[in-house]
Length: 309
Length: 308
Image 1 (cartoon, chains in turn brown, yellow):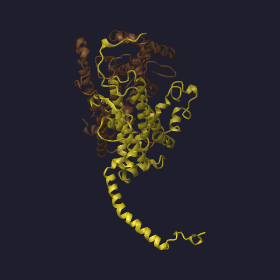
Image 2: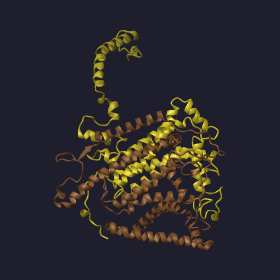
Image 3: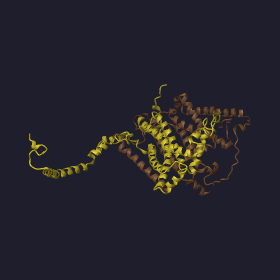
Image 4: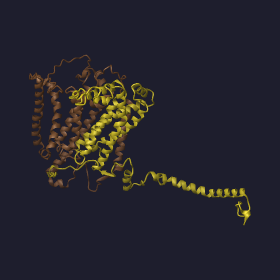
């Protein structure tokens, strides 16, 4: 256990935000989850008792007859905002006094940094470079993430859960988002920051970074395993495999989705449904590619003269 | 004709210019004796109620006694506060619902603008000076180190705050009708926040920024169709000297032009674009009905299916 190495990584000033983000994220998942469970309990109670549902207060916050439903922004909201501004300022001040922004040697194109890491919020994408070519990891994937986020409101036809925390009423939406945000975004950033060392190799926390370590990893392409050697057939075979993934995956997801969310399935138009399917399958393809790399040492699935996937 | 009166000016009364001046002054002094204390007293009375002065009432257009009307006016008649409604749902001020991350993001943008402008006074975006300017800032400028630290950490904090804000909006389903469009504006703001942070990374011109931006922009080589190493790029005539990466860097390597470009994007271009989107974002929050909740829970049985 190389404590010095571990401390150097953990205490690198630019890594501190990521260390801060983990407890923050955990706290806010707890805070949201707690309210979601409380609301779910109320929903279950009201669903079981239609008479009660007609009269009962529809929030888990206390409310008594005679209380004002609305409060003045001045001072009730503005004081919260003011307080938040003061607290953030104090945190920033303390942080800025105790921790210096990093400044390395002057830029030198002849001296490559190893590992050369992108800013921490892009490390998830850089980590994806292990599994995908740059045109996917660096260009297509960010574009799809942005577009995928933008289309969320237009493909989520579930009218429930608007304006309150709930798990029960939005299981599919919330678990998909949690998967994308926590597993695919935050944990990849975490790996990129704390695990990846020289040569972008995997170093467990506390393992000494060895700049001379070589890994004799033999990665094969999927067509090679099946003994396909001609370029034409590699291309056709890859297209068939990718097509089959979308076809079979789509059928499986479709089967699960229409059974678990029959109302959403009914509400969605063909366009909404196909957009959701496409983005969902592409998102799920990431961990699948990671898995087949680690389990079967497969580099590419689809090989063409112009691009490889 | 009373010729003798012409030009004399004292209407036949005795006395010359001197007499008239002295009597005048005496009169003035007499008047001052009574007027000055009276005016002074009046002035003290006015100043003892500063909120009644013309200066004050011209700035603050309404009274401040603690009445509901004045509480509302305090928000509505103030340009900085008028994005708020006069009243909000009593539960909407609860921190556990909103997490305050949108407001914190905006506050951090404000802090970054302030510290950023101060940093600009000490920084030249040129290969000769950039790194030295940062050293100068860290070692010689009073509070320069604190300034740079604050700018850096506020930027990191802003990225975290934006992501948590998006997370909260998702968990509360606040992107649902009628707020769909504002969610997409928010996604654009997320991207702009990341780009702001990324363009600032190169500016110290040190190894960290240089290699991070090299790694980042090398991706652009692989852009499909538009990059010289991307799918179908070479077939469309892309070379290192005309592809999208060349456009971003102003050259085929990260050098002086890239430094200047990222400086201009960082300090002028993206802040202006982001400000425009922020205006739309805040405006739409109000127009779409204010903060989304905490709304009363809706039961599955109460959903009215839209007619197809």
